[in-house]
Length: 84
Image (cartoon, rainbow, N blue to C red; front, side, top):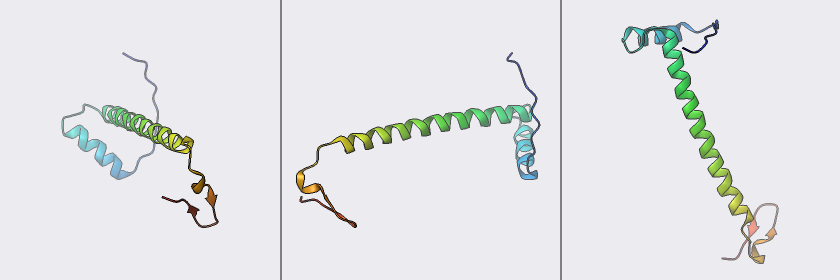
């Protein structure tokens, strides 16, 4: 089993009720299990969000590198003039 570190945190009564309800449901044995599952889900969500952001950034950079016709290079304070 992995080494464990004890951490004390302050939680709201609502969060405490939620954690206890998950344990009482029988799905989890302890509140620590609930927190570990929440961490796994958050980590997965953050990883997916980071990947989506990197894809969006790559697409944005690709669009910026595309050559533009000379008619698109006139930029005013309020608009970019581009003949279609």
